[in-house]
Amino acid sequence: MSRTEPRKAAALALAGLLAVTVPARAAPIEAPARLREPVVTDAELRGTDGRAVRFRRDVLGQGVTLVSFTFIGCRVQCPISDIQVGQVEDLLAARGRDDIRLVTLTIDPDNRPEDLRRHAEQLSPGPSRRFLTGSFGELIPLLDGLGMSFGSVSDHDFFFLLFDRKGRFVARIEGIDATPERLAAALLAVPAP
Image (tube, rainbow, N blue to C red; front, side, top):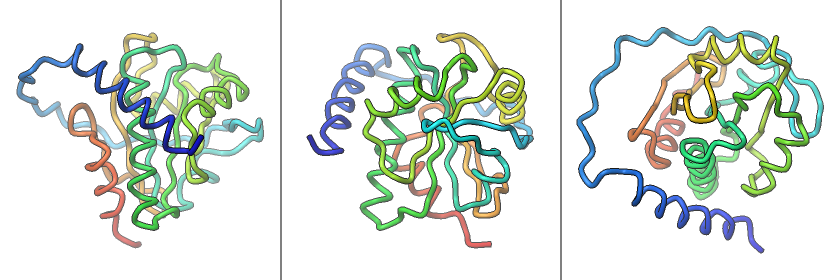
């Protein structure tokens, strides 16, 4: 099975989910109050291989980075986010841009590296995508600083964060504006430092 086949099946499932859950005519988007710039802590996190990394030192500042969030067990927003990041990865690969990093943080500190590994395997990620988790004491302050309020499986925000090559915050893209095409275009538009 090729890497894109699970994504095609997931995209079809997503289309069915959206057909059921999205009204035919979306309500107008209201601009939120001015969002504060993320406060990035250098949290110690673990990848799917169990190795420790520091978020600021080892993840950001190593290239243009898209940060997304997932909650294993979520059945609404997170599967959409996970699929969209896979589609962003495909769009970037088609442009020969495997230098852009795609990082997914779990918003559940109970997720262990092996849980994330199983979750990631279902998505068939490429080499530019990483999944990270951490202890409650490390993960929750990081999520809070990034603007992701710790809620429940059904009560959390849907957004993506873009950082430049030096780890500086560039943009927050959220809701229906966060299409794979828009995310990929925003990543490609990040200027060189």
